Structure formats: C-alpha cells, structure tokens
Image (cartoon, rainbow, N blue to C red; front, top):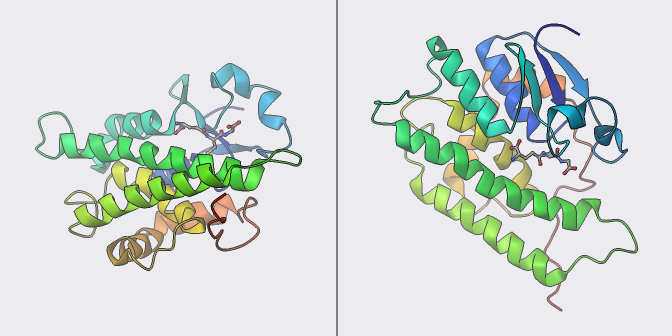
Length: 220
Ligand SMILES: N[C@@H](CCC(=O)N[C@@H](CS)C(=O)NCC(=O)O)C(=O)O
C-alpha cells in the first residue's frame, strides 16, 4: 500500500483523522478493524501503535499514533488550510487546551464503553463506577457548554473542533443533551460541514451501541 493510509475503527477516535483528512482534501486508503475480533492485535498495527490502538496514520514517510498528535501535525504541516493558530497567535493557547481537553472527555467515554458495551459475561460492571464516570463525563460537557461563545471553539473552525466533534456524537449515549443547548447547536453545525458528511459516509454505521441511550444503573 502506498500513499496515506489510515488505520481505522468505525465510530472511534480515528474518525477524527478521517474527518480532518476530508477537511484538508488529502486522499487516503483505509485499513478497517473490528475492535472486538482481535484483528487489532494481529498484523501490522502493533508495530505502528505501541498499544495497538487506532488511529494510526501512515503519512510523509512516518507512522503516527495519538489522534491529538495527528491533528496537530496535519494542521501544522498543512497550515495553508488555516485550521490551527500557530505559535504567536493569540488563540494558540486556547487551541491547545481544547485539543487536549478532548481526551479528558474521550477517556471518560472510553471507560463507559468498556463498562457498558464491551465487558462480556461473566465480568460484572460496577454500578458505582458507571455512575461516577457518567457524572464526570457530564461535568466535562457542562464546562464546555459554559465556555462555548460562538459558532466554533475559536474564532474560526479549527482542528480543536475536529477533536471535540467525535466526543459530542458518542457522549449522548450516556448523558442526555437536553441540558446542553449550545453544545447541541454546535453539534448540528459540525455535522452540517461537507467534509464531516463525506467522512461519515465513509465511516459507515456504528457497530457498538444497540440502543440510543444507556440510562444510569441503580446505585448498589
Ligand atoms: N489517546 C488515544 C486513544 C486511542 C484509543 O484508545 N483508541 C481506541 C478506539 S477509540 C482503541 O484503539 N481501542 C482499542 C483497545 O483499547 O484495545 C488517541 O486519541 O488516539
């Protein structure tokens, strides 16, 4: 395989990279994995990503892992697209904060996915841990709702919106968005972007969730 190659699981953090490649007009091939069938532990992925996770991106003669690093790298090396404030720009620090905050939120979604979706019998999920993790996810959303001022996180659309975008489509499986009107509208704006629509078409249907919402379990 030559050119740009994205190692990808549908509806996972690798969607961030798929979407950003569309925003930047970079053609890519996709190697698709199923998170549950062991395919990520076989083949080339463990040699590309230290924990055999996605995304991994083959580009510019390298293989990169960590979605945040990939987003920063792509925005900085393709700066003519104007998707990242560079050092010296007054919005640079805010940009970096949001890029990394996306993983504060993303790891909470991941913990809920593990506890609520991926654990198999006879493993027992802890209702206490689920309730605490859901409360922590809700708090990250409340903090974002309070800070969102305009159409995007910064004065214009940027890589930070790509990082956060993935979260806002996964978090509603665990936290109702009725209490987040600004985030709900922001999510609509994100999903109306032509590059987002194209990336979603390539991504296909999510295969994790078997319902629209997972209510809190009773405290034990
Ligand atoms: N911080 C990393 C997290 C990567 C990550 O955990 N990806 C998940 C999919 S969202 C994965 O590959 N999970 C497979 C596993 O945990 O075995 C990033 O943002 O790229």
